[in-house]
Image 1: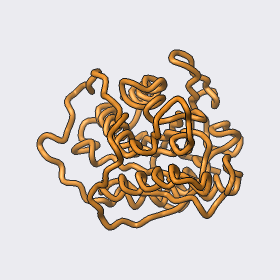
Image 2: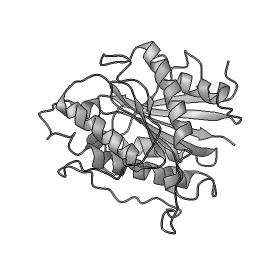
Image 3: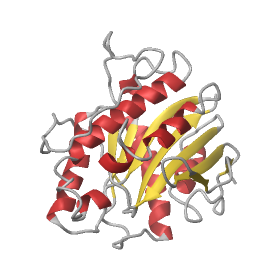
Image 4: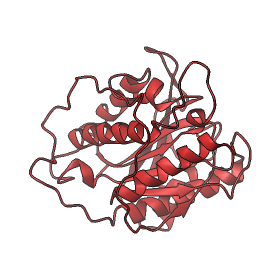
Length: 277
């Protein structure tokens, strides 16, 4: 059994309410309720501790809700659940240091929705803005000196998987790939070889968790040059950021990176993990 890893799972319900699915922070075991019963955090944590030499106590902090879009639900200063995500990051200040941000979402942006324009066209811009502000929050909530600048904080993006097979879905996959290719501390986890259904099956969740840990290890090796303007001030901005709503997806400069794999999900899952050293 794990001796260092723990997890928590908060499911935002509306603007104000949150369902504490795991009933607080709990040891990372198969029935910890940090997923439906368990999620990718199970093998992610086991891989960190048992294969990659993690020595300090750590927590996988999950904020997840099924059937969500970036711009409507998660985008900084705009999304319905952004304040919940931000609050969970800030709540750990003084108790540990944020070590990474893991993003697994995209199916809803790949499906046709009569209420919106085609949000696959703006996915890259929205993903870029979200990750930028999450890094700002994590940098500020970590002990001074943990990171030289926010761009050092590793990011793992789990690409949407086999479902759905549509042009919109392919644009979302391409946007997720482009983001990771343009960020030296971001790694892509691919999932098309696992579950071919809307929801992931248990074996796929286990494989995904292992691949996320491998991707994290690759992301932490990325070379980042921190400029004098890279580090945010002592308090992140409260000003709303406008999500991309009309600009088409544009490419970013590419880089060589080791690409790893994982599995599709129906929920939007934002997992962060902190080292409690």
